[in-house]
Amino acid sequence: MGKKYYDVVIGAVLSIYICTACLALSPAYADEPEVRGLWIVRDTLSSIESIDAAVDFAHRNDFNVLFVQVRGRGDAYYNSYFVPGPVNGVEVGPDFDPLEEMITRAHEKDIEVHAWFNMFLTWSDDNPPLDPEHPLNSHPEWFMVSAEGQSMAHCPIEAVRSSRNEGRYVSPALEELRSYLSKVITEVIVTYNVDGVHLDYIRYPGRDYDFHPRIIADFEALYEVDPRNVVAGSAAVDPALQYLGRWVEFRAEQVDNQVQSIRRRIDLVDPDIHLSAAVKPHASEAYYQYGQNWAGWLNSGLLDFVVTMSYYTEDETWLSVMRENLEQVDPRKVVGGIGAYRMDAKKAASQVEMTRKLGLLGHCMFSYTTFVENKRYGSAFTRKVYNDSVAPPDDYKPYLRKVYE
Image 1 (spheres, helix red, strand yellow):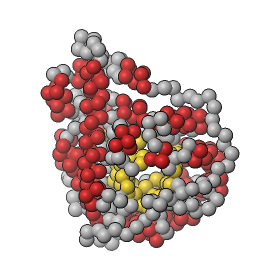
Image 2: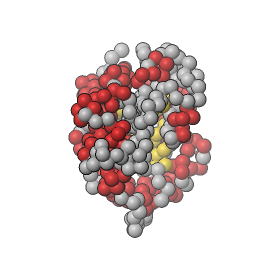
Image 3: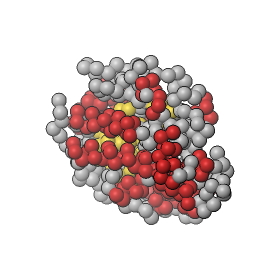
Image 4: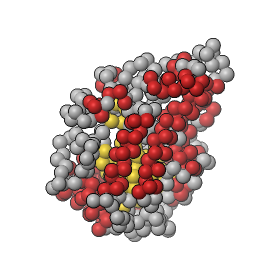
């Protein structure tokens, strides 16, 4: 990739994540309803016992919204007619439906369940999936391509990891792929009494992707220039950087199309189902680097709220980034994500207090696994930030919908 790729655009919109002063961190208990979220990774859905333990923990520690990972790597932790079952060997069937078990038990405790889907990230293991219906096997043409023409479906996994990617991603430039993923969401919202849909990896892995032949052809048809030449930084190709800006926009629009499709499906089934996304923590960087226009999604009503993956260990950085975000969006549409796995309970509690001082919708801890692995973490954390079981906002309460059998 050319050294100039995005340098001008990013340099104009991003600031250094340093703040000279931080909010005073005196104890701040919630005095109004707030989202107290907890991300629950799919490993917890391996048995009824582990699901029971997670719900009991959430209830005992006053969490009120669970983001439950039901799609990890192109698989389904629920009974699906067309999505392959869990790739880690968990047996899902008539006798055990992890999503249904989680919903039933959480709603008994007045806790919401938002089904968490990994969207474009579809595979990350060394060996390919065994199921022939898995997208990597059945539709390798769906996967993203690098500027050098290397397909994420066919290249060695080491090549993917060398560019600091989590795994193999599918391309939002393809209408058939977007239709497939919207169908995945639709099946869940018409079959299960979920309170929300939570999108993760709804973005590109980085600026080096996606140069799928389809998106190159579409961009060339509009602007008569190859985007690979644009991002190489050639002054002869794009002296005024006009095409670079158009490429940034065009690339992001492909992700927009996926979010729009899912929003339409939800509105047709039940507009009271919340649609949210786990997003890169800095709104401008998310857009320019990852094609994730989450500020635009919030402001246009495509999303009801976002959960920022702001896993910074320094309070000053966390606060500086969030303040910049709030120049663009309503704080009551932002849930601050906190990386519990990277800090002790005292540090996590101080960041929860910042979400309250900034007037955010609430906070979400990543993840439940941290509390399982460190039994003392939960009591130390909740003792510092919760003095009672504050309810979520009025429209964040489990309710019974009529779902299709």
